[in-house]
Image: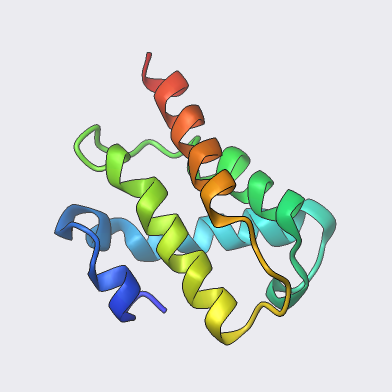
Length: 104
């Protein structure tokens, strides 16, 4: 998924941290209810973003690109693995808001 066109369309700084960010995102999402990736729901993804990704110590130059990276990953998952429709814009805004509040 990190090599997908959707992820490659992100800035190089985001692509460099994509494996670490996206693994942490999915681990935290799955851990929210102890489920497999194909079984995650919106609340699990929100936990993955807010409890996993938003708390990472990422360079300030990368942080603005992370919501789009996560959205690209979710879109790729939706296209290939996750059967439920995801509310990508809402989740992207949630992680952006949390990232912003952590840098203030």
